[in-house]
Length: 234
Image 1 (cartoon, rainbow, N blue to C red):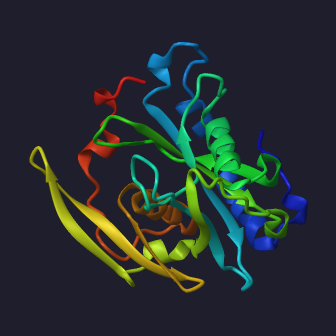
Image 2: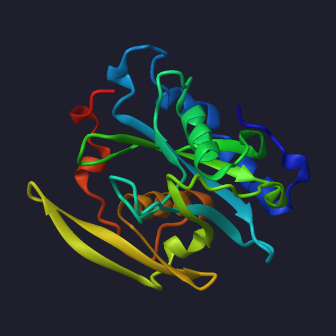
């Protein structure tokens, strides 16, 4: 479903696509689940889209984010990446991420060039979340159309900020003897203040580290359950 529109992109985005594209096929093979009608393999799997585009300043890589509707039963009003749970009809994690992005914010899958898939994250509730990185070469072609039932606002933020120790704080948490840090990033866009934290912040820290090929300027201390595959039935 992803389309390679690199002919229309900036040199920065083309370079990024080449850098990340080397891992695309390997990552897709590693994280796809069997094509089955059984809900046991899909009801605890989700995918999110880390959609990157270039801002007005050369080299300014930005990521699309949403603020969830305040009427949702879970995580209402929180900042999130476009995405959601996998459906039985989805062929793979890429299709899940692109489908959800189209449903939530009106992003046409044909505008997104998927370049790689990051290692899955496992939540403490047993949900497997697969981050899919895609490039939006033609930002002007994307006309945001938020689904009012799910999305309250659509905005974007500089990806590199998730590697900096600015506008960031952390809280130490503990689960079953495992101490880890929960990161919070404060961001303001168009006069609106947003708090980017928890799973979304963690995924963006990882994505930024992969894109910029350097670690964050702070200690991550990820929770052990994030990578505890054995406890999750895929």
